Length: 265
Ligand code: ADP
Image (cartoon, rainbow, N blue to C red; front, side, top):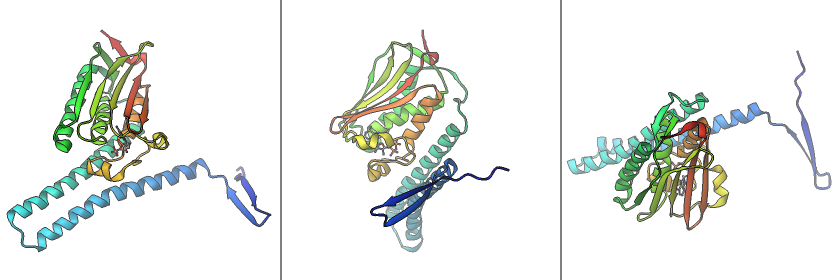
């Protein structure tokens, strides 16, 4: 067979004092490193809630607690169990999305119905985390249908709306809606007047487990996989995800769809 070719770069630093040899990292090695990182991240994300649950179980087994105290511990364990459930369902979703290039089961879906469903979920989330203090507003648009996978589109829209609730303080205003574009395509947008995102973070937001504020993401039930899911869903539907943000003013996330996926009645 062919001899294996390895390119070697030689760097000489300073006054010839230091010699360094580096081999070109092959695509295969990069993929392997990414896989290792991913497995390490997933393990860490599971271990943290699991440690908390184990601690509470130990307490329940070993300490004489009143029924009221027992109930409190069980509720805290429930939060951690839900966190693990959220992580597993996002991981499964992501693995489905990465496993096939086309959306699963395309049908015509009403853009308005998708918006109402996602807004309902975001309202429920706001009720839980801020006592319903977020102002969620639907932007009107003429009715149209989208050719796509209903569950994927719903998940992508919910992720953006839920993020706008989870990453902004109580009292923030979130506007969401569809817009028909001049080229015959359409876009979904979610705009908030929250803290915004510094420019250096923007290119990395769709990386799996990348978070600007780890503790806030976890406290509000984030898995760190939401925007990775949104990006995949947009791309599978022939579109893209965009983000514009100004620190101190807020963020706008959009999902664009090409004309081939849009049918105006
Ligand atoms: P998470 O589960 O942490 O929300 P995502 O992948 O959905 O994970 O988002 C990645 C990160 O992007 C979040 O942790 C947060 O730091 C930032 N982010 C997403 N949406 C917003 C927003 N509307 N306002 C401010 N930061 C946001």
